[in-house]
Length: 487
Image 1 (tube, one colour):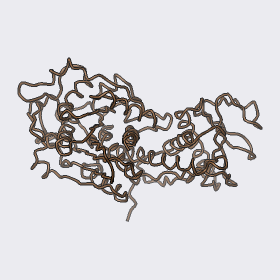
Image 2 (cartoon, rainbow, N blue to C red):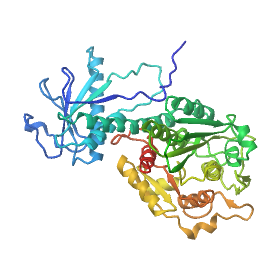
Image 3 (tube, rainbow, N blue to C red):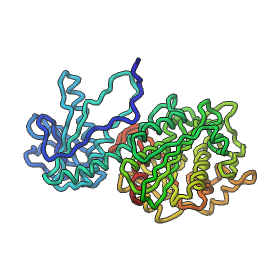
Image 4 (spheres, rainbow, N blue to C red):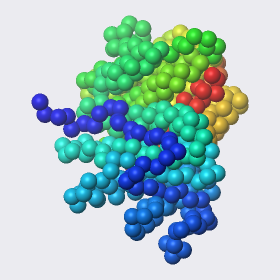
């Protein structure tokens, strides 16, 4: 049988281990803070120690690379780890291509002042900075297998525990990237649902239930059915449940799962449509976060809902001017079929709040181009009905290296959400990101709620820090750290 050209999901991560002894014959990197000149290193290398700077050293004695960690903040350690693993892979690949037998292990010696959090940040950079997703028939087997972090004697156990935790966070980001990057001729709503079932099967305490189009129709999930009505691939609702004993807080995470978005009858421009395979990045973040939360054994109950559909064009596609009845009965007048994300989220929010009455609801979605204009491509938009909730999410993002900027839920635009023909209108006039959030708020039953718009940072065109081109997995680590703050 021919091997599938698709990479495996989830991707295989490097092994990152912590030890107090170096491995003989494994090339070594010396991680250096900005402005520090390591003993025994020539002054004429031109190395400054700035974040992510890598300098190869000639000869075979001593370290092979110098890696800069800048001012030594967690962000700088992540960037250094990512730069190091890229340099190491490039070197070992060139050695193999020239007929050599490169080692499968490389090692890095961090500054003596580095603590457990610094080792965790460096490991995160290593694990994510070398991520790659390519659909190819060639053998792209990873030559580098293990990165050993050299720690002072007596610190190995503590630092290894921090690195192990960081690995679960990185695994969440990597899985979210895999799901976003999978091409949409494979990634139907059914594929996303079955993959969610498969990737969590080995995680204790986490279950997945998949609802099909018949179940959705019987319970009147009109938003999901409308968004997916034009496709030959029917929609799904993926429900993940993690209920540890002793948990006193219940969180509901809702992630947009549009596996491809043509815009429907309100057709998108052709130039960027090929990128719409990543329009389920919010749903991918929720699936990946639930897996990590359960794997870490966090003492907080979490339910994940991923409404998934393919927004396509056909005689059965929904139309501008339609009135759609959501789960729970509220109706929406459709203004633009390319605003399908809020249609599926409305159903899932209404279902989650009515079914579970959770303590907190958070939705995450590549929802509006307005957020890309407002905040660029590296910062997520944060809307929240509660100041403490907003701060908790922002702090979680800071802890894991994902940047959020709080946006206003401006009440002066709230009346614009009302419609004459239906309860609410899908695309009210006014600032697009804000009015979209106000629309979603209508389906949250007054519960503490936050909306995370990741339209900008969910996809990258260039390499920076631990991010590589393609789906970034943005949001997954924030959700895990946010859940951990309640545990």
